Length: 272
Image 1: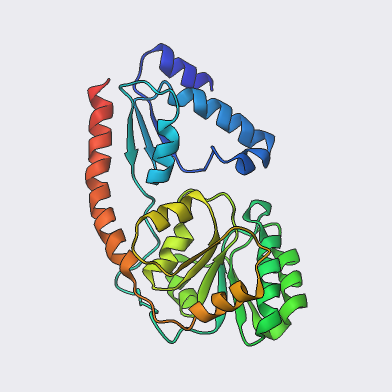
Image 2: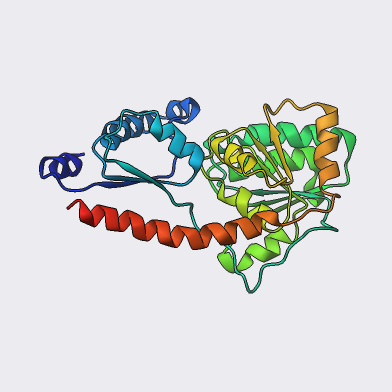
């Protein structure tokens, strides 16, 4: 904070990179630190030369603030963890499984994931769950999952490296994400690049994906209290043939981002 005020007093150009959905009330309520981050960021935005964020939905949130007329907002999405040489599209014949790729922390709403999986298990007990990730809730989540499905239907991979990602995706029929505050949704987008359907909550990330109008295999839930019909739809989509239309979109976006990044740095230097 001291450095920030020093930069402002010296009239130095300030560029801010915004990733977290700091406008989301649920994210702010998670901790005092989050509320402090929001307070500092909100006042810093009004002094910024450039603000870089990861989606157009977040850009719209920023435009609602009382920013300087000279402040420029640039949308520069996060690079995905994709190896174009190794990547495979899983457009059909996917396994009957639910994949979870996430930090196993409180803010990822893992209790809601258990509620959804339990409901799906009421109508079909042939699917498995594959989990990649670690965190303070790992032991509890593993114990809770196995109590619902049994040991044979749960595969915990722990933290996986970049070169192990394709092996993970090959085991996934559908990706489940229960975070209720998601700005960009990197795992969601990587899943869609592979043609693997996604089930998630209504967040900034899912809204941004829906607005692309690419007919993506995306099921957006309002709540974890799903009906048996919704549970059946979730399992049914694992069997449907999909396209990886999002991959073509991401490739174009990645090329565009290089030009946007150059423009943002150029604007920063011009305002020195």
